Image (cartoon, rainbow, N blue to C red):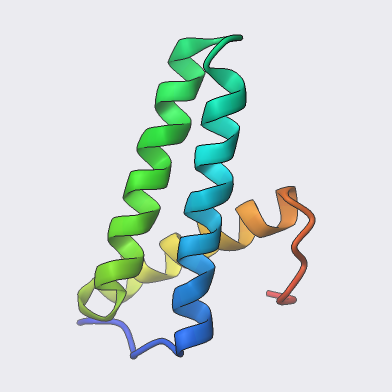
Length: 82
């Protein structure tokens, strides 16, 4: 069953999380290219999930949101208390 539609602000959270992950990838590129590739891949996954979150199965959408929240917290963006 697809997830309930998200608000525009929550959709923006996916974009923000992907940007943070891409920034991390940029910093990691010179230190550990494999970690940089993982961060970039996770950013692409977050972007795709954000684009299609309303059609994802609810458990996948829930986990994607958990990842977005974890990136928020790691980056010091404590927008939500989940």
